[in-house]
Length: 228
Length: 246
Ligand code: SF4
Ligand code: FES
Image (cartoon, rainbow over all chains, first blue to last red):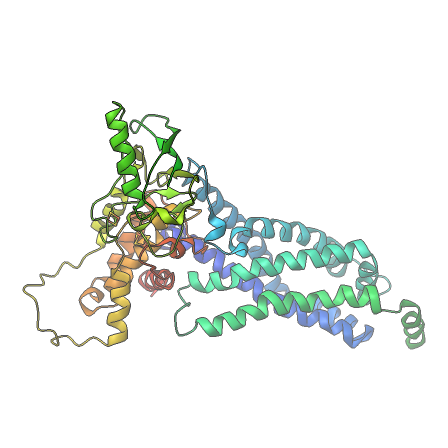
C-alpha cells in the first residue's frame, strides 16, 4: 500500500493516473458512439438498447468505474495544474510557448473545463431521465426533442470540437506517459489517435445534424403511432 | 547593427530584480549573442557600471553553460542551438530584444542572467552513473552492441545539461534532461545492471527539487540545443513503470 501511495505521489505516478483514467474514458466513448449510432437504426432498436443498458448489472458495475474516472481525471488534472503553476513562481516577461508546443497541448485545461461543463448538462438532459426517470414517450423521443433545439445542438457540437482538441493532445500523451510511444509504434499510434480525436467526435456530431436538419418529425411520429 | 536590449538585472538571490534597457550600437551581424553582451559589458565597465552577469564557457555549443531566454524562447529563436551559437543576424537592425534568465522554482536566480542549476547535478548524484569500476578502455568489440542501440544511446548522451528543457517547459519540468540520462545509461549493457534503482532515485530527486510535472507539451524537444527526442521521455516512463510495478 505504501508502495502504491509513493508511486501515485511521484510526478510520473500522477501522470499515469491521468493517462489510465483518460484512456478508460476513451474506451467509453467508443461504446457510447456505437450506442448513439443505433439511433439511425430507428426508434425501436434504440429504445430496446437503452432498456438493456439501464437494466444490465454488468453495465451498472462499469458505470461506477466510469464515474470514478470522470471525477478523478479532472481532479488530478487540476492538482497537477496547480503544482505546475507553483513550479514557476516568477513568470517570463515574454514567453513564446506557441512557437514550441502545439495548440491542443496548450489548451487542455480550457478544453477539459468546457467538456466538464458539457458533461453536467449532458447528464441532466439524457442520463438522469434515462437512468432514474421515466421517459415519455420513449428514449428515442427524448434524444430527438433535445436535438430539435438548435441552441442545444450547437452547444453539443461546440463541445465535440473541444473534445476533439482535448483528445488530439490527450490520446497520444496517454501512451507517451505509459511509455508506449516509441519509434516503432508512433505511426500506428498516430493513426489510432486520429480515429479518436477526429472520427469519433465527428461520429457524435452526425446526430444533432441529423435530428436538427433531416429528421421529419411529423412523418416519423405518424409511423410510430402506426407501430404502436 | 544596433539593437535595444531589455535585460533582467538582479544583484543577488534576495534582490527582487528588474528589467533595464540598453542601446547596443555597432554590433557585427556575425557576432554571437554572447559577444554582443561582451561588447555591452565593456561599455558598462568603462562607464563604471556593473557588467551583466551571464554563464558561458565553451562558446561552441558543447558545454551547456550558457542559457538565456531571448524574446520568449530558451536559447533564443532557431532550432538546435545553444545561446552561444545564436548569431545577431537573426535579428533585424533596430530590434528590441528581451533577455531574461531561465525561470523556474528549481532554478533560483543567482545574479542577472545566471541561475543556480545545481538541481540537475543533484539528480545526477542520485543515480546518473554506473558504480562498477570500468578500468581501462576496453577492446572496441569486447561487448557487442547493435548499431541502432548504440546510436540511440549516443543521441541521448548528447545532452549537455543546459536546462533549456526546464526553461521552455510551461511546467518547468526536467523530464527531458532526466530522460536523456536514463536513456543513455539504460540502453547500454553497463548501465542496465542498476537501471531499476537508478530511475527511481533520479525521479525521486527530480520531484524533490521542485521541478513541475510533464504534461507532454514537447516544448523541451523544440528548444533542446541537442534536439533530444521526447521519445526518450517515453522510455523514462517505461523504465519507471518497470521498476515500480514489475
Ligand atoms: S535535454 Fe536538451 S535542453 Fe535539456 S538539459 Fe539536455 S541538452 Fe539541455
Ligand atoms: S557556452 Fe558552452 S554551450 Fe554555450
